[in-house]
Length: 321
Image (cartoon, rainbow, N blue to C red):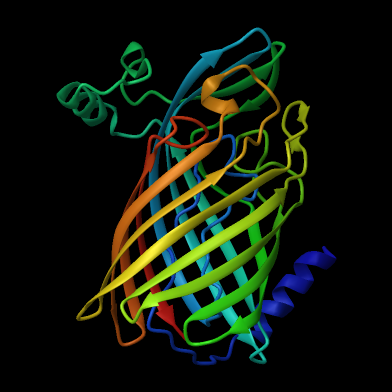
């Protein structure tokens, strides 16, 4: 209860606005929604510059992984909608405090028919999706036939992230910061909404301006997740992550963004290609900014067909304070 009291005090102390401006808003607000990884403090790509803002994101993803090995059965056939509220506040012009509160809607979804037609039209593999009924929910993880996670369709609070970002170099064309974060075990681990343990992470963030109209963002970091406290305890692996993004200002408040982010595996060795290899997410999107408010829309693809949803569609609205 003491930690929740501290969190509440921080929120109340940050109630008054402090303005900051930036011509570039940073990378797209997308992180990995792969069902068995999303509770392990999945990172965003971040800019090194600090800001005060509130943002509301709606992300929708589809995942199909139905595979078995000698020891493991991982059955994921679902769509996840994540509603994220992010609050950032510059504290005494020294560092940025960041709070991320997710609400997860997990279910069978509605897109299987469209995805089947899309794969058929372009001759793309569907990973066996057509062998199951359309839009039928399945979320179960077993090791040596022992149940670890039995996902439940519905709506629930995910794990809440708190972070601090400290800039070390700030110039007109270059920025360097360090970010540290923890993720509080709020979501139900047995039903797939969290992992039931405290997670931590650290990252180095670098911004580099190429021209007056183009800025690049670079991140590298590590995450130290706690154990998955499901029906049976599972030790998750520490993992490294990194990526880069390019934001191009094309005028009249519009910018185009392309970013690539990757991470090493989170689960212990399963002998399943869809889980054991590195995850790579390619996101392409655009942003419209006017009078301290911005809208962004993006589509993210799983380029390595491992450790990530088949796609993520994201819409974010942000207000600079």
